[in-house]
Image 1 (cartoon, rainbow, N blue to C red):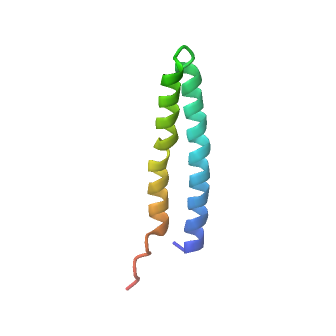
Image 2: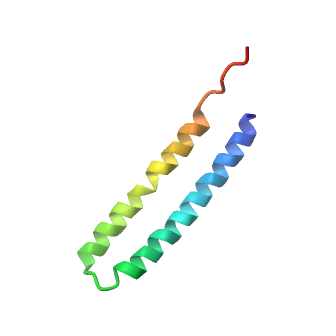
Length: 71
């Protein structure tokens, strides 16, 4: 796969990940945390704010992998 195409796909994947993850985390927070106290809110947003990094690291790792040599 050409490097430019790989970077384009990776960019779209990262943007989609952030948008979808933010929507899902927000929907979950509104649905489940409405009656919770401030400490629960803090812990949820701390955890969910850091959790998106794991799939993003996988995408970035895929982006920087060297292509296999032909031959």
